[in-house]
View 1 (spheres, rainbow, N blue to C red):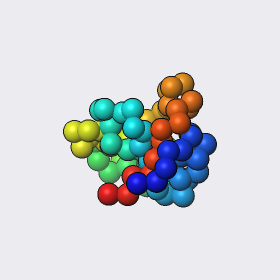
View 2 (view 1 turned 60 degrees about the horizontal axis):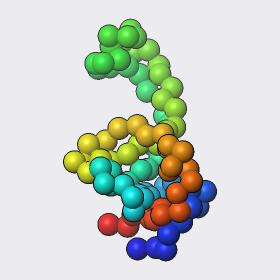
View 3 (view 1 turned 45 degrees about the horizontal axis):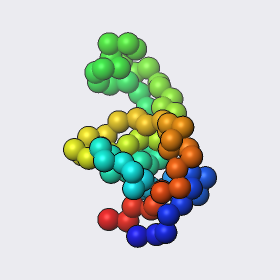
View 4 (view 1 turned 135 degrees about the horizontal axis):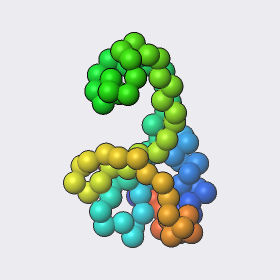
Length: 91
């Protein structure tokens, strides 16, 4: 495990494709970058919003893996931005 980092250092690791976490987190394992892509709509739930075959631009964003293994989008809180207990997740 690496030494503890601030958010700017953690963000650089995220941009480099690494996973990072915080020691303070109890309900999350880590966060990671999801690269953007273009694809054609072919399944729900987007089929309920767009016509089949519509090309969608999926923008880059950061996802979180929860302690239960679930995955969802993530945005840092003020506490996360100011935290100095970030580390690279290597397992």
